[in-house]
Image (cartoon, rainbow, N blue to C red; front, side, top):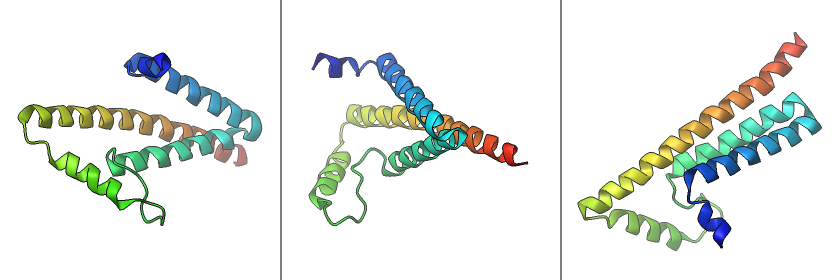
Length: 124
């Protein structure tokens, strides 16, 4: 439990995320070369775009096993912010989430461009 509590600190979360990204990219590069780097960038971009589109709510979208009560509960909770402090806190959380998603999107776009760009340059 103490390990999960430490993830609340932003530096620790960024460090672990960066370490995970570097290790996955290194593994993909060792098996697939530059194509693996581009593929990791593309997969990461798809995941972060889903997070951006769903704005932190549950993801599912048309699968038969999705419980619609979960969506209803989240939307009801989101609309129940009536106090100004609750609205500001929700807006602050949304701003932080948007900032993180933009940073991750930029990194994944760069990885995909570099990985597929090197492959393209090799074929010229």
